Structures are given as structure tokens and as C-alpha cells.
Amino acid sequence: MRHSIAMTVNGRRTVLDVEPHRTLLEVLRDRLDLLGTREGCGVGECGACTVLLNGRAVVSCLVLAVSADGAEITTIEGLAKEGRLDPIRTGAIQCGFCTPGMIMAAKGASVLEGNLCRCTGYAKIHEAIAQSASPPAGRETTSA
Amino acid sequence: MRPFDYVEPRSVDEAVALLSRGGERTRLLAGGTDLIPRLRRRQWRIDRLIGLRRIDGLRDLTLEDGVLAIGAGVTLEELAASTTVSDVCPLLAEAARLMASPQVRALATIGGNLCHASPAADLAPPLLCLNATLRAIGPSGGRDIPIGEFFTGPGRSALRDGELLVQVRVPAVEGRGVYLKFSPRRAMDLAVVGVACFRSHGVATVAVGAAAPTPLRVPASPDEAAARCSPIDDLRASAEYRREMVRVLTRRALEIVP
Image (cartoon, rainbow over all chains, first blue to last red):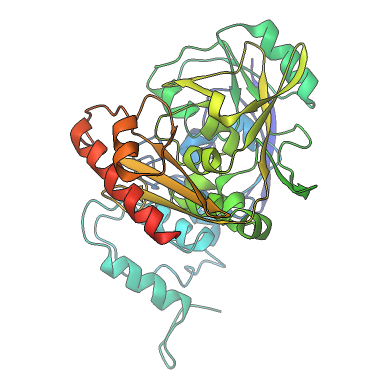
């Protein structure tokens, strides 16, 4: 049986019918076309699917869409303000697959314990996040 | 995942009724962090999921009459961040912080960690040291299960058919505790072994995880603790190594809380 759920996704109220066995990740990608949220391991280990659920960073592959009824969801797409990228999105990208999850974890949890990157080391990523959190004086940033 | 039905009861009684009517292929959904991977790997086949998130009270965390009452639906993140938990039993908060990742801790619950009855459940050794009681409600009413009687085997607990764990009750006792989790990675890893130690009025209590078919209270002596556990060989470590680590970590824990 399908269930009707209502979520606020990136500030927009969204109502849709979902099957109970669909994850929030599947609904974001396949139904709402928000492809920035990635499926890595699919079992909560890698963090590539991290989104904010009611302000908290969670792995969306372990959340059933039905249990997100009433929730406020922010995905990587929700961080772009007025066509400009959020200040956190600077550097430290190789293939980019893990990047949205890293950014959402940095936003929601401030630590990267739960995110894997298979291209590179983590030093640049940590640096980029630290830089975005406190841009050095005089440095040009995209923040409003 | 294979399709299943989903219901969200509004009360414990309603959940218990659904659970006892449902039989084997009805499961409870709390945080989902253990359940969803099992469903995805098709380890479990279910017809119906009972979502617990709309039940009032399951996420309450209160200190009353010297007992810290933790709703089974309290998340690991809430345990780690709660000033009440950190004041009354810092040992438990410490163990919660060492589990999984922030994105999982925001979902996973204390009740789920205990009910899955993993031999490596990180919250179990601290709760064994602290003499916690688990309150369950079933079709014939409620009962309190001492945590020492709760785990009956890997993945098996003393909960009867139709019973729901609703609260973890921890007596607030003066003392000092420590949880030593030994794992190759500092995050997102299971314990090779975990040792909790709590000393109150000069008496030390020690409990171990991942060193026997269930989390286990052991004597507060490194040699006797090692002798009492019955670890297995698996991809994380050999039984022999685990036993040795129980000895080492028990010694360290006893030194940390003299």
C-alpha cells in the first residue's frame, strides 16, 4: 500500500505517495530528481547520502521515506543560495562523488567521522571545511 | 528491499497489540540503522513494519527518585549530548560517543542497540556495570528485566513475543567509570572487544562486549576476566587475541578508575 507523505524539501513543501520500502535517498533521487545526494554503500557506512533531517545530518539510505513524513529535509541542492554556491563548497574535490555528503556532514554534524572518500586523503577536505568555517581576513569568498 | 506494510501506532498499547497479532514477520522500526541493512541484504523477510516514532514518551529522558529513566527511543546522539546523562552516568555518554558516526548516531536508539542483542553492543557493558533495568511492556502487562538477564545469545534477548522495550532505567550511583573500546578505526567501527569498568565505594564492576556470545559481567580481575569470556575467531580478531585484549583492557580500566 502506498502512503501519502508531506515533507519540506529545501524549503519547498512536497507531497507525494510512496511505498513503505522506499528509502528517503531513493525518493530524493528518483522521485524528486535531486541527484546531488549519492548512493555509495547503501547501508549507512560511507556517508555519501548524508542530508539534513530536521537540521541533523543523517544517512538518507537508512531512513524510510514514510518515516520522514512531516520532516524538513535539506539536500546539497538546498545549500545554493541565489544561484551562488554556499561558502563551504571550495576545493578539495577529486572525483566529487563523496563531496555532497561531506558538505552535508560538515553542515549538520561538524565532523567527518562518517564519510568515506576513495580518491584521496582527507587532509584537503578538512582544510576546505576549516577554511569555509572561518575564511581568513581579506580572502575573497562567495558568502553574502 | 522487498515490499512490506507500514503502520505507525500512537501508543505503546497499540504497538503491543499490533506486534503480538503480527507474528514472526512483523518487526519494529526505531532508528532503522540495524534493520534497514538487514532488509536490504535480505537477511530478514518481513510482511509488516511497526514504526515507533509517533509514540509519546519513548523519547523521554528524565531523572526521578535517583533513577535515570531513558526512553527506548532516545538516540545515541541524545545520550551523548544530554547533560543529565553526562552528570548522572558519564560512562554511558562516553560509550555512545564512540559508536558509529554522527549521521548514524542521530538515528540509532538505545532500545535498538540493546534489542538487537549484538555481542558487541557498545551500550551493554556500561549498562551491565551500572545495574540497569529494562522495562518491557507486553500483552499481559509490564515487567522489569535486570540487564544481566536480558541477553540470551547472539541476536537473542529475554523479550517475549509481543513485548516491547520501553525504557532503560539506570540507578544514579556515586562512582567513576570508564569504557575502553578497542577497534582499529576510531569511528564507524565495531569493537574488537569493549571493556567497561565502574567503581563505586571501593567496589569495581567490570563488563565486556564482543568477548562472549552475549555482553557479559566478568570478575574485576584481569586474569579472571580473561578466563571467564568465551570469544570467537572472526574477521576482526582471533579468539586468543580477544581474550588477551580483555586481560589488558581490564587491567587498564581498573587503573583508570582506582
